[in-house]
Image (cartoon, rainbow, N blue to C red; front, side):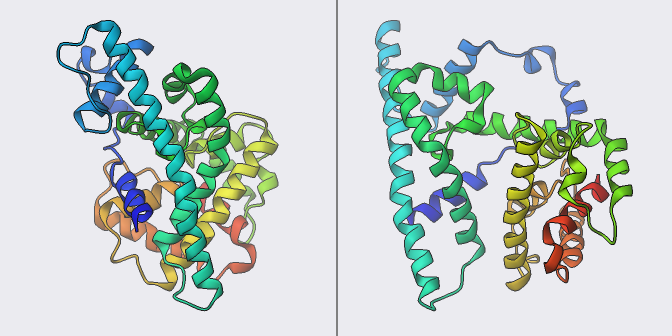
Length: 302
């Protein structure tokens, strides 16, 4: 199935994440922030080198190169939006199979459905933006990447997005350690209510650790956290049901931990599996308070 292959490609393209303190040891010219123009140009050149975008003719002048890049980006965005709608047929087939008593939902299919849900919510505003102000989309990829569907992000943009999420999660884990300890003290019988996150920056800190957008008020942030933890609950159930913990690839394993608020920089594969097993063991017998249980584990781990 094409969409499953594309999902796996996007998953495996996740970059190596560096700890913020390690970044400070890099040469100055390596860690120097590029301007918006240079960043966009580098993103396009990188995509051309990978064959994602067709490169301009070798003898093209600056104006022709600009026109060519604009056309290629337009085609890339169009294909990405089209892919989301084409993928819906596959999602419908999966759901129909399950309704009719066929093979049960696999974890890969469940994650594809979640990815599709996110992309569908983004694609209409994205298309409107692409039609009216296409030239601002590369800028949005730098400053507001959460607005872009997964199929409309260039490879280097995806890498940069993931790196920023990881560094933000790490910073939040260190900066708000005392806040998480305070929340852990409010947990009762291994559960923590979502209402405990309202006020004093707790919701924003938790969003950062979970690599979720932090904009908005606490009501919006806690809604994001709740929705994410509901997805994690379903993912946990599939991991437990199919006994996948020992067969997950390193990429899948690290991704699963990051989605559950773990910091994975420098973590050995054997330790990572122990962490995920600890999480799954802790939630396996608590279906009645699934969200509160996972929230308690999150603050306990920080």
